[in-house]
Length: 97
Image (cartoon, rainbow, N blue to C red):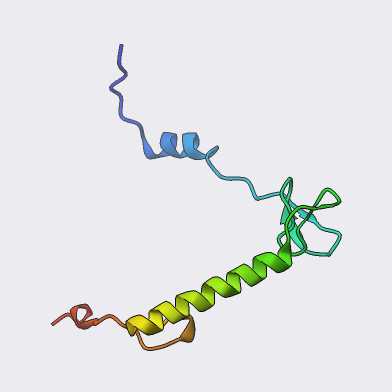
């Protein structure tokens, strides 16, 4: 049998009171940075006393990708958002008459 009673705002709120997400558990790494538990530290690349991420290589790769993206945007005649250039879009539709 289906309950066709109206669910009140109070009842809905009581049911949803358990839906809150918990705060992430943070741990301080040996390097002093805070990181989420059971994950490698993004600052130094260590996990449980072992080097698992090559931070220098990751930084170099990020810099290469950024440079390549900026060159591509320059070839296309666009400005990158990181340069803080003028907004490319026409916002004339924002003005209400």
